[in-house]
Amino acid sequence: MNETAQDPRQPSSATGRRIRNRRGVRTAILIVGFAGVMLGVNAAAAAVRNPALSLVVGPALAAGTIALYVWTGGHVEGRTVDEFPRESARRHLVLGGFGGLGLASVSICIIALFGGYRITGWGSIAGALAVVGTMCAVAVSEEVFFRGVVFRLLRGRWGTVVALGASATLFGLLHLVNPGASLWGALAVAIEAGLMLGAAYLLTGSLWLSIGLHLGWNVAIGGVFGTVVSGAAAREALFTGEASGPDWLTGGAFGPEGSVVSVLVCLAATGVLLGVAHRRARLLERTR
Image (tube, rainbow, N blue to C red):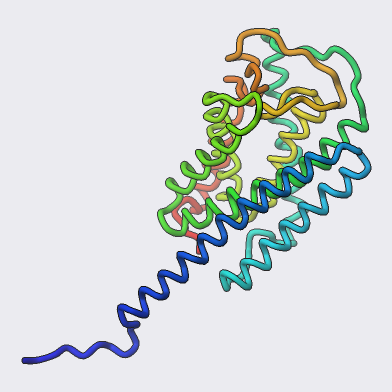
């Protein structure tokens, strides 16, 4: 009876299983580890209410999260981390920051035109600065986890559509832990923010643009207009404001992110980002 010799260049079945097991362990470490980092960073940043201290602690936590992500990519995953290119950092952060501010402002203005929001007076510059510091850490930690870890790994295994949909869904579910959370609010965040931020990462291949968008949006609704952010309690902001009207317009206890207006505005932005990504042939690429 003839026996087929195994190609010595091919790993044995036992070796293949060991490789797959190591990859599984590595993936679990990445997901669990950075989920813990995200929750810890967000809690630490939110606990600081002093404006000057917040402007130090927030960016420091953000920088530490980025450094840990880059170190983990090189030492745990054994890859070159391309998600934080220095050459595009300033451009994408500024573009994303103003983009997020603009999208949030457009949403608030449309809600106001229909009688759902009005500015009642001046608030606190110090309070607004504290929000900026806090949101620096929040934007970075959440983008590193949801786009840098979850989206990237899912895309490498199952492709863009699964990665975009699953990471957006998980991003929405995270917001169910907030005091004013609701299933509709979580769904709205998944659609308006999860898809848009995933599209921003997909377009550029880096996390700077999605971080800028995330930061600009949160600073605008929480630090400028003084509204509820994703069901969390409102904080001191540049303006004091008052929301009134049906929940579909104002977002109710969840804040403007639960408004149909915000969903439609951000869906339009998502469409633009995905359209540009399609033209650049990035939709079908897979990441490592």
